Length: 213
Image 1: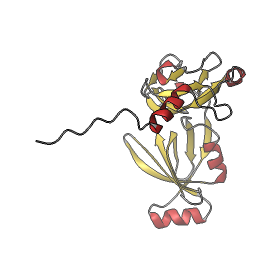
Image 2: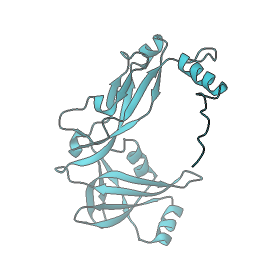
Image 3: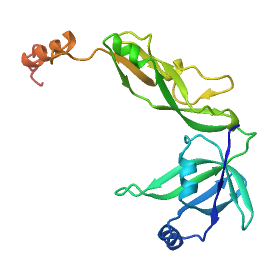
Image 4: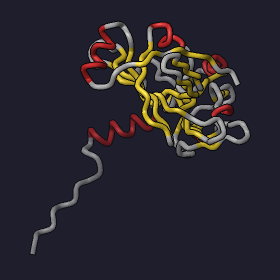
């Protein structure tokens, strides 16, 4: 399993301590997990870059030297400033490598150039799926080849090819992508034209109201 090591620092708890942490250029975080007391830590800019260089489902090995602490973790939640987008806080989930976890896995699209040669475009509805498996088996991504799609073809999450031992948590019926024909010169499709005509005529013929008894 490809696993990086990220060094973190201890920090005090509380909102004031978290603000002081951020003033020092550090990002406050909390490490939590089953049968584990929460451990407050802080990450410097190098540690943050390491953390976000991987997908969210990647496993990181964090190490704190004093007091001594280390754990395998996954990024569970990220809090950002709604205005500046700067990092405010991280939740790091401590995991066991022998217990199954749920993770978000991105969907990688291939074959889109071949689709465009057919005069079609791809409408993406879903960019990642949730899976359940052992931490060491979490894929970096799930590949979807769209080169063979025809106009109107739809791909659902249940049609994605997953490695053995990985269970799909996302609803199998959820739409991942649809191949559609682009509008040319503003022309409407027959269905759209029909809808427009119906609106102009006021839809179906209105029946006279029935008097109340």
